[in-house]
Length: 305
Image (cartoon, rainbow, N blue to C red):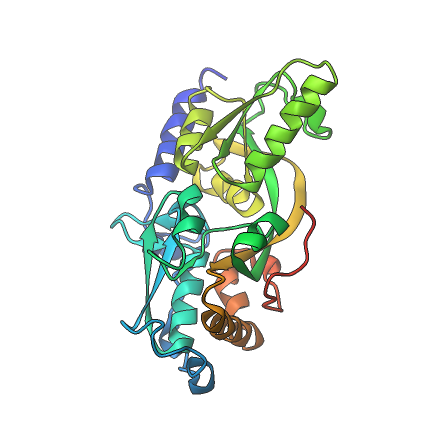
């Protein structure tokens, strides 16, 4: 364990800073993780879909998207500081269908929903669709993602997640505002109710902070989206590993203000067009996760929780 710690810290630093490997370099190196940055130049404007936009919406010709850009492979920054990831590719593809451009703005995850409809047009940042969220905003489903744990390679703490109550007594990191934070807080209460050792849940404002804490042995495990957990293994060259199976797969959605129903209709039609044409699956294939693609862009689908 002691000999792998420096490697783990360095590898995770590469992951969280986004500065060790450029997207173009990944494509050129077959031994590196597959990556996207999908070429949207071949996507044609769909006039009948663009016509769904009211005149005052996107009047500046830009779809302003908020994302927490440290959540590879969904949304993160390349070595030039530019947003990349499958959510960013989706943003650009949707904008192309609508005949506008897109701009992804970095924002803290738990600040995004409140700012959609005022500061930003939409939020596309791995938001799990929940009944609580759809009371506040509209959510347009586009991908199905579960949750998974990361631990240091070799699982030096001997953690067993086959039953979450086995986590009692450990420290687990999550990102603020995520479904994983809710799940771990509920588990912490279950540990107390069962009289087990306390589960310490450490919530971080960014995924990079959480990953750094895992690398530094501040936390014992990290709980995040399954796509993120799987990709972390590749990006750290195996310095971290996944633990257990993918859990509780649920749709994630584009966040849209309930005051913009026409924008929601236009986006729903645009995403459905990308699904029908196979573009969305191609985007995800570039990141090695095409199996996560949904084929129906449902608005506020019924979900548990």
